[in-house]
Image 1 (cartoon, rainbow, N blue to C red):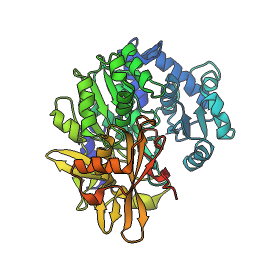
Image 2: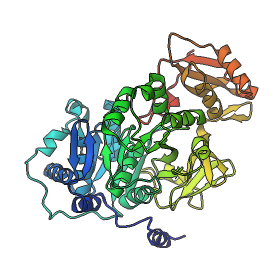
Image 3: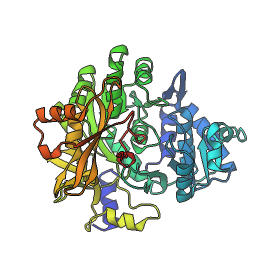
Image 4: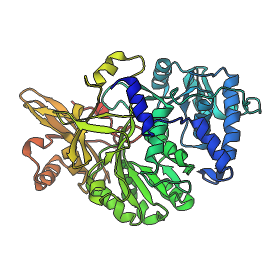
Length: 495
């Protein structure tokens, strides 16, 4: 299908439209000016409050030379400042490049160089990392006290507005550029699939610097819902925020649920306001999803699979059979097509898909099959109209020519009563090429576990012997991406 034919098809089905963040904000100010747009601790901002402050921030950015097409880096926690900066950058026709909060000097400078960012909005104490290009949010908002006038040109739906870097769990991060019509179109058609509406209150436990977090904003803003903010995840802070600010929808990850379970947060706090919970970010053990649903009996617990390159590709919906929500990543989002390659790799195409990597045509070429389908690198299984994610192709362990999927073993290890998180990685072997080494973090460091104990447990689950780990490394905590995926490349097997 040629580009013009594809665009006509996407527009005919409503998957692409004239969506921009500026138009969405203006619509909500017009239709619901006094309705809550943001809830943060003791602060509530209405839509007209948000617009007023966005125009002040936009004026401050413009005074510092930011214009259409410029890249502005943002390193802020999940606070109103992140939201206002994101909308202000979009208002100028500029591009937001998010930097995760844990990133420090070397990582920040590498991404600033690669993105070509003009400046960065950051916390006051972080400005020195940006070598003269970092500015505190308050300084930008209070630049001159005058909001941006209406004479500034509005960006178009095909313009780029978002530059994100892949999480880099197994390789160097790659820059992904998105236009409004891909990301906002995906959020607009998906919001009703999740059952969201203007009275919804959406809370994301994951960082807004990641596309999963931004997706929560895109879905909320598509329908005019209120965004409830949690600056950084801790089990008790998530529990108290749900109890006090009463969100109706929660974006979360398996690691969040596991941490709340270990901390007893489901017993200490009132979670009854929730009507929808989305679990995403890594493969969720079915037992964990079932536990979560038991703790939230009046809430639709669903799963979602997405990537930086396409936002939300698969998800279960409220009303889908719960067994599918427990054991699969769901059905394709509207307009998204999914297939499995002969090697079992998930491949996708559709209206939310990116077109290539920034300044990296070689990686971009490798990412797409000859017929234009995007190779995700995730392994999957078809279960009727649903798809289950079963692992990453790059994570496979080649033991004497037999490929072992670590996810099968990790899911069982994570169900052991002493294990908080696990990761199976290859270790060199002179005879077989590779064997499996299990890295494990414990629920209680004072209650250790041995390799023999874990092997016995795995054998009781009737796992094949060639999948058993042959070495165990206990770590205090796993190296995690901002969305709490384990970064296997940072796990070092001791000599």
